[in-house]
Length: 135
Image (cartoon, rainbow, N blue to C red):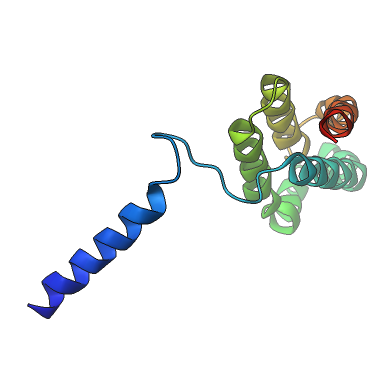
């Protein structure tokens, strides 16, 4: 009996929480242009650091890839989360932000190309401009 009451209360709680959003739309409170800017800026810095530190080492000794992945493997999850942030934003530049998120994901890979990092700064300027226009 207690278990069924508990489930009923939980169902009512979750139902009331979900009532404020349109069907099929999820937006976390941190999904903002400022958050996207901050994450892309960080990924750009880390990606360039990875390539500066490991590109020559990996070219000379492919086993260095394992060390790179051990040191920077965590950042892939953060890059994927940034793509999610870009995808949930309601922005006229959403497609550009998502595409840049994927380029940032390639930028931070130990096996990726540093040239993927070059797409990030122009998008950062677009984000700044959009944010200023909203003010």
